[in-house]
Length: 264
Image 1 (cartoon, rainbow, N blue to C red):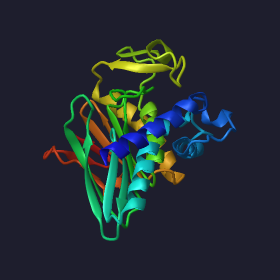
Image 2 (image 1 turned 45 degrees about the horizontal axis):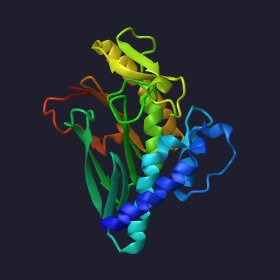
Image 3 (image 1 turned 135 degrees about the horizontal axis):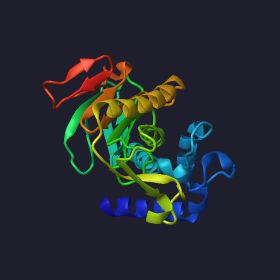
Image 4 (image 1 turned 45 degrees about the vertical axis):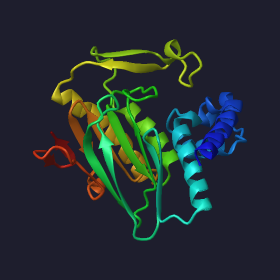
């Protein structure tokens, strides 16, 4: 079993490496279709976002790999419930009547839960992804965490990247940014400035940054690209009203709900 998984991952990596220049190119600038199965999943996932946002297929790589592995699992066995967690990007399979409860981490370097997600088979969500400047990938924004629910995890992965980029305070003196190419010369962001540290912000500044992310999320929800989103920045959380039936704070018994803002 483990050997098979390692062999499969090796094939995926070989396929992706063979097409890296294409996968690192902005999605709207290249009409070439990737050849690899995971690469095609990546390109298909970012395509709907590309007309309005800068994005490359690499924004969906973790989610696309999770999708492909889950599809292989469900094809090999009659599973009533299954998931693949690829570094926090989670592909879900739910049979009739099945459900999942998933914890939301407030930041990768301090893995305490700030909320939970309750999903049922009758709901459309089959993918969950989280992005933010404290994670493994570069971010243009300052969110500690943005968790996105979507029909596919590869699309949730891409959307989380876009929304996390939008949670921002441009030119704020407490935010340190450097060109992405200075950290990783071969990355897909080139000279775009990525966040390296965020100083203490006021409550008003946090609310302003979160609002920018909420606006971005609402646009994607209105286009039917994602189902819901939750945000975390320096101790404050925000979720959209339509997400309340799926997302809740679970570790702060004195949290106060004011509209769609949950203050801790």
